[in-house]
Length: 189
Image 1 (cartoon, helix red, strand yellow):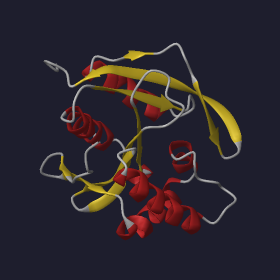
Image 2 (cartoon, rainbow, N blue to C red):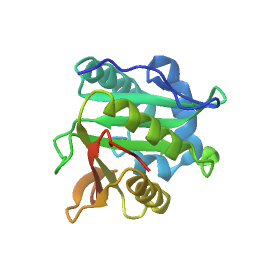
Image 3 (cartoon, one colour):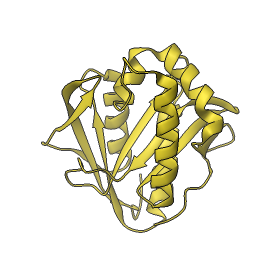
């Protein structure tokens, strides 16, 4: 177990642990992203007040983060909120130690933010010792699939035969799965 920390990805991109100061930024991002946000954050209930759900989310990630069971960061590009990235130890893992999740709000997409954030988070978790990471993506999230496939190429991962069923807005959806079986890599290419 290691404490969550700020991660400076590069000159423009920084990851900071999610806290109450990010609540309004997350809410604004959800509002501009629409259904994409619900695909990326399946714990959100579309028919429940979002503010209450964000309060609970922030409390939970703080509690689980203190126990080393999850690490959630706000992604900031040029000090502007761009999205979220997380590593969670969850019961639906099939082979990995961690599940990697990410969401970049719609207006901030197609700038390489997700890939740069993912690489920084994987570097960070790998410094804590040998581990493995799964990525689960809704099959309708084409951008998420492309990001996962690009990530596994960079990190010597592979697509898994298994699927993980995730509840999204009250529906059970089988997600595609990828595994990065060994982090840190001796020589990442």
